[in-house]
Length: 116
Image 1 (cartoon, one colour):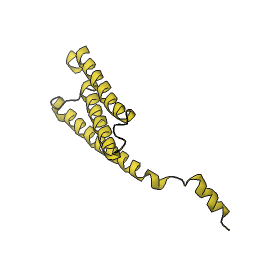
Image 2: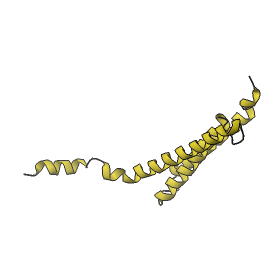
Image 3: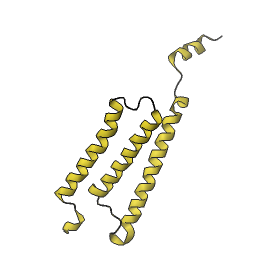
Image 4: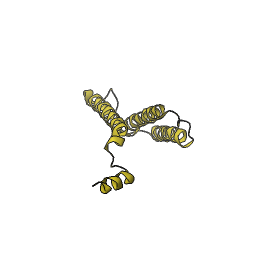
C-alpha cells in the first residue's frame, strides 16, 4: 500500500484544527448575539464557514486534490463544489420560505373551528 494516498498525522491534525475553528467561529458569533440585528449576515457567515469546512474535509480527510489520477479527482472536486452550491442554495431557499409553509398558529385553528 502506498503512503502517498494517505495523509500524515500532521495533515490530519491541521484538518481537525481547521474543522474545529470553522465550527467554533460561527457558533460563537450566534451564541454571543453578535449577529442578532442582521439575520442576512448571520446566514452568510454560517454558510461561508460551513462551505469552507466541507472543502477542508474533502482536502484533508478525503485527500481529493486537483493534480492526481488523470483528472478524476478534479472531476470529483467539481462535483463536490456543485453539490455544495445546491445544498447551500436549497437550505437558504427553505429557510426563507419556511414561514409560508408552516401550519397556522393554534389561535388561528381555534378561530377557524368557531366559524359557522
